[in-house]
Image (tube, rainbow, N blue to C red):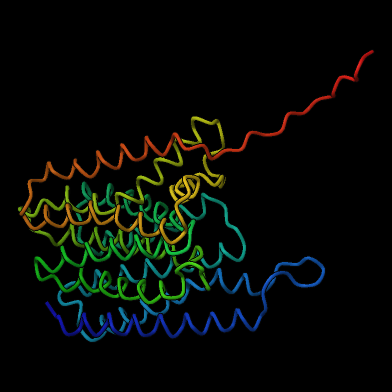
Length: 343
């Protein structure tokens, strides 16, 4: 494992993200706050929403440099494909942030990027098809976490730390390179995204984060020896993102609401409904993510039986059921003609 190269990439990602994010913050301040004359949205708001591109640029540049210097080891081809796929998904998110794109087009691009990553990772057809589906699912699941200051960056950093620990168990440089850089980049971004957030991830950063984490898991799955039970350990690392998606879909289904329309019904919104503060919400999600990440890492390392991954999954399912009871939908006002008073 090229420890020096991976550490250097992580440091470069941290430094680059902090500097770029600070520049975006200053640009937003120069653009001004609030709304421009005539009721038009302020350019500052647009700049803040695009601030997550700093993570893409900082992490992408650091990983590309490490890959070029051989820090990916024997997985250089797979890491290159992963980086290309993540870049395509990030570009998709950037375009979508500026001009909303239809769902089929977004899924098509994500599927193509995931297929490229899985093919270059060397997974068989039997394992590759579920991997592509899982990458697309997790990419969008992590993107849905961008609903409160610090939420996405906190959960993403914890998940990246788990993937890095799993790769370190086997001394795998390739699968460790992107999680290490992403962990550092998200921590640097969190300095500006913690409540009250000066910049926000936006679709570019959220999709990039989800794709990078899911694809790194697929790369680790391809490189892991059979005795590591990677099939059970790695999916559980994404428990919080999957729990949030399950909560939203179940809630909207029960309320007969459109499944793809934002409705303020995510985990973060429900925690706010029970009077958890915005920073507290990010902390709760981070602690929630720590449990399955630690469990999955210990299972991957052979210190726990694979069946024990059911414990955090069961706990998360119970939490989802409890959160479903928190009211988030406002009943529409009654319409109709009032009867005139008689007498």
